[in-house]
Image (tube, rainbow, N blue to C red):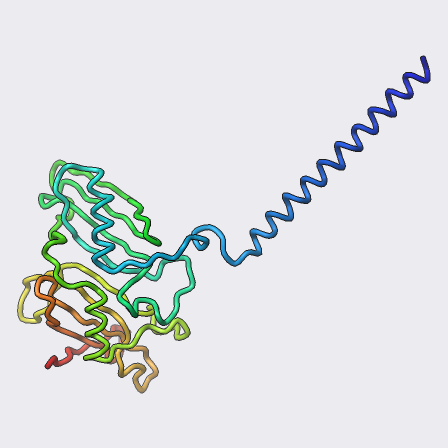
Length: 252
């Protein structure tokens, strides 16, 4: 009886030892896997395939996803490319008129529905849907059929005719990386308060930096309906209060 009792105790001890070894082996494997992920340069969103879209491609995708949420007609308020991608951006971002990150606002003409979202690597994410029966939300204004110019054509003309430079990630004062694009309503005539549907290209002035070594931004506006380059402006420096100073570029 005594021998059987000892045998059972020894057997139990062996089982505990074996289970401990197996557990530690699995734990070390998991720990090594987590460490490998942590050291990996590509994790999370960065592991996604980089998909870049033109302004009008982003416009179409934003409306495709937003129209699922309502039967009312939706119109564009604002669409803009962004550097907020979670990925390393280069000076060549936007050089072909395409970006991987876009933000947008869409709404109804009467102001009872507003939808905000973003597009990253070809995937549209709806961030906020607002409804107001008193129609006090920002109103949608533009249909895709009204826009007759896209970002690839706009950047080509901007670079060829006005020598706009891309934002350089190596220069912190440039603020932006590559070229950026916006579709919105804007004031393009200093003598009028009438807003115009525009596609705006933003980059760095060919005269940057100035003698104070300030990075100088530049905007070029295209009429969204006609595709005509209607105005351009460049930053020339800062005033004593730190506000940027701009001047209009004379177009041929």
